[in-house]
Length: 277
Image 1 (cartoon, helix red, strand yellow):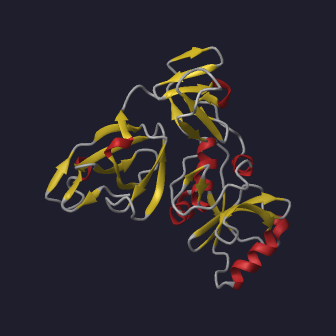
Image 2 (cartoon, rainbow, N blue to C red; image 1 turned 90 degrees about the vertical axis):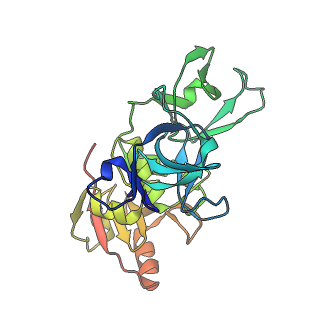
């Protein structure tokens, strides 16, 4: 989360870190439908997170077809293709509310889709064309969108809509996501700021509580943390998480999950209770 690489640092870090050169951010928006944010400028290299259409991105360095910078929503730093970026304006007005919204070249369901915008992607509605909203990238069925300032009330209810989505390390879209992306996505939909990785969430989300002795004492929305993993207490003695154990988002009995994970040498470490938005 610190924009510092090879002697180049963000201008706002001047006086806080050592660097040969401090540069001001170039503000952009993600114009690709989704794009991985990678550890290195290598299309085959690992990625730790994913950025969605409409997210703000501050660019600090570019070389050839690659850029390096910081996602403004959660502060994550990494590399992405320059072609994934577009102008910073206009400001987004709407957010995708359904799991996916197909992007069409025109206002017709019979047109061949250009792709899809995932749940949580942001866009600017320029005008309406019948039942379609026209955005810069094309046309989207308007009922799949909601105003940017309209939020859900229950992050667990949001996460429940994602049951069955495949597990993908670093993924943050409804084609695939990991445990901390599930929590971040659900919280963001409820106007609860959440950092990206589980260790960051363990230090910042809600407030720490004593680990309950019985599954029935967990409240819906409690966050359970193990080293490198996070899950929602779903209520009624169940756990909801994106897990490599099943390679998808699942709901399972909480006591079963606790025993399985503890049996792998990872007893439950922390429980945090979310504040209401």
